[in-house]
Length: 276
Picture: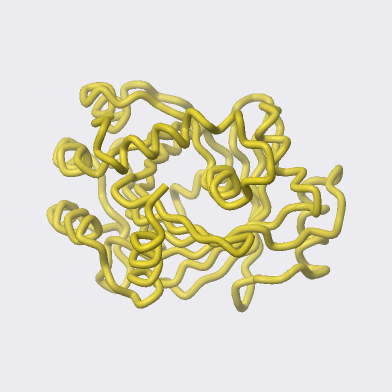
């Protein structure tokens, strides 16, 4: 991935509240969008949905956002349209959640504590993928971000995923900046994540120059402006899990062969060797 110096610069910029040059360009591209408030977002929570994900080079973002202008509104919190997120992922001692995903199981689960720093909200979340290729998310608001194993974590997981084993512990944290767009036409929103930085297992990594876009729909609709726009730009959908990529980067002792093609693509995009 990125060199150690670039990793440190990226992580430090996020931690200090600074913005990368990519973040500034995204903010500029979003300036012409109509805003939507956090309260209005409740109508498109889409806690039971289909997800379509894309790995996008930074060089394609301006063109994409230009295509989508007028078709989407953008979430604005405290006059900011690019918001900062922090996440802590929990797993079993033997990394069962990660390994289940690595093995290609259709049914899988992630447990995380997410802090929405600009809105000053924190949630404990269980995110499940079903064998119908749907994503179902349940969450519990917490007074503060949950960063350590606790009875609360175990109880909430078991209430949502009865087959789970208690005894989770934090394995990975990440930080990123996110723009959220909401369709003017129907129940659809998309998230655009940039400046991703990971920490865990005594190591750090970052993904400068790469964006992860996730289109969230009640039902998959290929006529969606963003899906049509991706097709026009020649960017294919690619499933990607930030948790699994972070583990693959920071836990070299754990098998990650299934994710090597994604890691290769990310390296190529960061080096500017591949445009899509």
